[in-house]
Image 1 (spheres, rainbow, N blue to C red):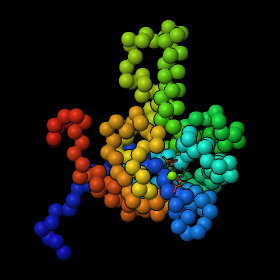
Image 2 (image 1 turned 90 degrees about the vertical axis):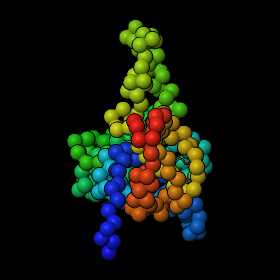
Image 3 (image 1 turned 30 degrees about the horizontal axis):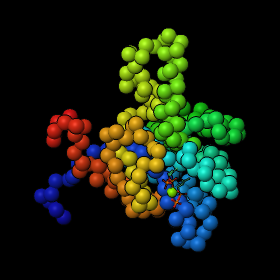
Image 4 (image 1 turned 120 degrees about the vertical axis):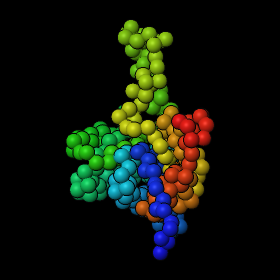
Length: 245
Ligand code: IPE
Ligand code: IPE
Ligand code: MG
């Protein structure tokens, strides 16, 4: 149809992070309880993960429950604490088929031991897989992550294993949940909010930010394509000059 038009080359980000926001508003718009929004949100994690894998994304981090979300009414928190079981049952077959590896980032001390076991079981079941890594951030908060990193480094200093002057960025990065993942390229927040809400504060230093005016359960493959297309147009300078890095 456009014989002279060159196909647009798309740069696929290696590591994308998404703040899964807007479940409650999605449910309210339909006259449903907020929990129905969370349920639809879980189903969408699977669909968007498979779409990202198909596009060649290597790692996808999704923010599913924050260290601040404990502030919500007990009934909602109770429902959200059933998410690990939902991840286990709702993702199992599709992720096995598509070789998706699942890992979890976040605090493990506050959740029930049953949930800890479920997260461990999901992780172990997929540890050998070679496809996209889905990093589910559950009871995750950047401040908590950085605090834990500082505590571990302080322990090494106090035991004499490390001198304060020898601490490098690499020591810090090795203590973050993301230590085995590629650097964060693109951070997406659906729902219309334009803030990070304590997500990936260290990792987002030079990530491209993309805000989508769509609620998470409605965020589809098409929106992921749009975000990646916008990413392709960005000029990542890392503090240098245009075209240099
Ligand atoms: C995101 O959706 C899911 C969690 C934070 C657990 P919300 O529950 O924040 O939905 P809104 O922002 O109220 O619409
Ligand atoms: C961020 O969404 C946390 C998750 C999506 C898990 P929130 O809905 O909790 O964020 P705020 O309260 O609008 O900043
Ligand atoms: Mg929200």
